[in-house]
Amino acid sequence: MKVCVFYHDRCFDGACSASLFMRFHRECIRPDAQYHYHGLVHRAGALFQESDFKGDENAIVRLQVQRFAAHYLVVRSSPEALFLTPADQQHFLESQRDGSASNRHFYDPNYTSCTSFIAHIAQTRFGFDPSPVAELIRWADIVDGALYESPKAAVEMAEPAMKLTLVIESSQGILEFHSRN
Image (cartoon, rainbow, N blue to C red; front, top):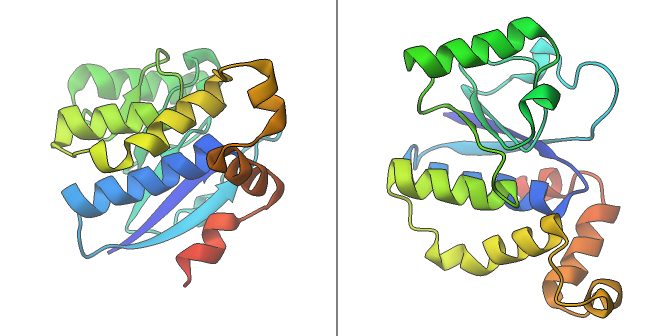
């Protein structure tokens, strides 16, 4: 089973979301899966080509999306920014009403980071234990929500997670590199 994970590239929460999704998916859904990562940056027009969906399953974390089909969808942005067309939004809403995607499409704007949202969904819907990665989740909330203890802490970038943030945000495709090793 090949799982392609699409995530927000050059983004601490994007990298954390992709790695947490993989851990959850491996532990609770498919222990035999192989994971491939596809980093994307926000840009005008379509983020995806149909040919991008090369996995047996495709997970999209922390991005605005245009296609749903049989893909996992874990998002937290506003519904207005989420869909490229009214038809995409209608498809999402119908799948939520009829339950056809109740364990595949998730949306809740009340989370500070997509990482904490994935942790919540994985724990409450699938029995995943996020406690081993609690520090990752905490830092994703801090970085994505700009919840630093002080302006000085935000500027100094002294914490190890903050240094990792600098690396992630300045390096394109960091997960693609690591997923091949």
